[in-house]
Length: 399
Image (cartoon, rainbow, N blue to C red):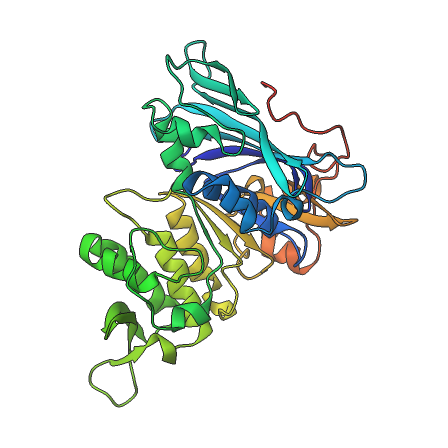
């Protein structure tokens, strides 16, 4: 197994449009499907875990409109949602973490059950908490827990659970917004790129000082996407800061300098994506990043360069990409097991491996995933567990 893989399996129940799913993840996983199929909801479930641990469960719910907007709406459906993550820590230790959150009157909520196991042998570190009460734990003394927050946040003060907590909160999720990147920004913490790119100038400054090799890689790929560009740097504008690009101009002996406000949406999204893929702080990278449709606003000719950057980044950190771009998937080296087909059926999102016929064609390299997508000949395996309307997934079951 690649050392870059953090999450090996994700099971979700009743989260937004996802009634249930059980997905195996790889170093680079492609979530493919049309607009409105629910690809973003899968990434948001992982983003929710990060937010609930990095800030608070209450804020994670409020930012999404409250529990009534998070749990799946369906007649007669249970009033709780849950997530199970199976993982491998950077030191190679496997484990699992799962929780369910239930609705209470007046848009209230409670963590009904939460389980964590680090190591899968008899001597593993673990805890089980139900409605704020510690039921079982390997810890000699476990911090006080309450039903309105995840116990892993409290347990992060214990050395045995801190590596998992750190790995969870280092995940990053990105839907880069050119409008936000274009505007001058207040100086901020540049160690981690924020979701829309609202601190990208500070991140570029941080990388320039602490990881110049990352800046070199960003510049290299950027020049492949837009051949006339020769680099990007942070530029102060009074109390604010912005990005400054160096670009060749016909007739000039040296590159001209352009601020972000003068650059196209495609250029700004490209630098945002490349920054997300190359961010590093104190020799540490995110354990996982999720990218929403990175091909948006980019010329199709740039797809191969973007794909190359994604593949290279996945050797250092786990990457999940949502896409419906045949150009981005136009590569015979993309393995069928790294593709997850996402479709909407009756208002419900279903995620599954691609169908058997597609797997056979791709394994023989008769077509690329992009070519099958253009022909509308790639879809979900309707016999898979994730697609069947079977009984609800048990998020706490050992298997």
